[in-house]
Length: 231
Image (tube, rainbow, N blue to C red; front, side, top):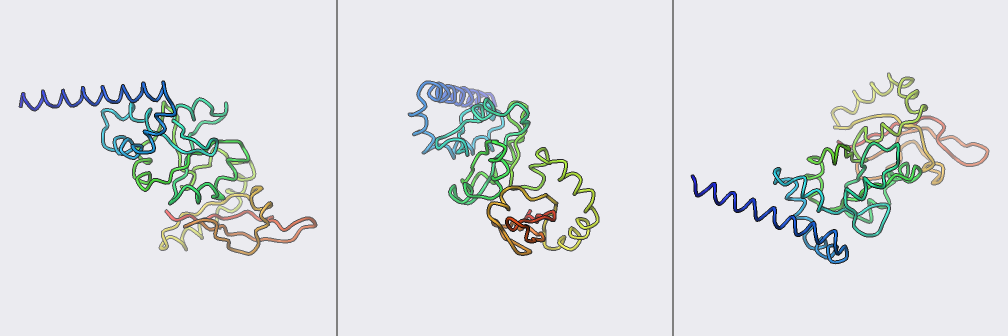
C-alpha cells in the first residue's frame, strides 16, 4: 500500500510538471503550441473528462475553433473578450467544422456580435457537458434547448405567454417522438433568406414551424416560429 501511494504521488507530480511545461509553451510560443494542439488537443480533452484532479489546469490548455478567428482560441481568450453584458460562454457541437460554421443557429449570435466556439471533434459531445463553467462563467451549447434564453427579447417573452397552450399541446403531440418544443420570434435570418413554407429544415434534428405571408417588400414570417429540436 505504501508503495502504491508513492507511485501515485510520483505520477501526480509528473503530470503536474508536464502540464506546467505545456502552459509555459502556450504562453511563450503560440505558433509552436498551435502545432502541438493540432496533434494532441483530443488527448487534452479526454483528460478534462477523465482527470478531475487536474481538470482546471487542462481547461487552460485545450483550444477551440471560433466564429471570431481562424486560429485556435482558449477559454481565457474567449472570456477576456466577452461583451460587458454577456454572462455565458457559447459553443456549438457538430459533425464537421464547415457545417457548424454555416449553421443558421449562429445568426442571432452574429447579429449581437457574440462569439461562439465551434466544436467538431466527435469526443466533444461527451466532454463538453462535463464543463459546466469556466472561472464562474457558465458554458452553454447553442444547439440545445433554452441556450439563448438570456438573449430573449420582450417579444419572445410575451409570445411564450400568449402561445402557452399551443406549446403545451405540441409538447404532448411530440413527446413520443423525443422532441423538445419552444417558441421564438423570427430574426433577420429568416428575412434575409426569405424562407417560405410551413416547415423548413435548417439543420440535423432542427425544424422551424411557422406561417409565412407576403408583405409589400419581401416574404417574411409575421407569426411566431415554433422550433422543434431533437434532444
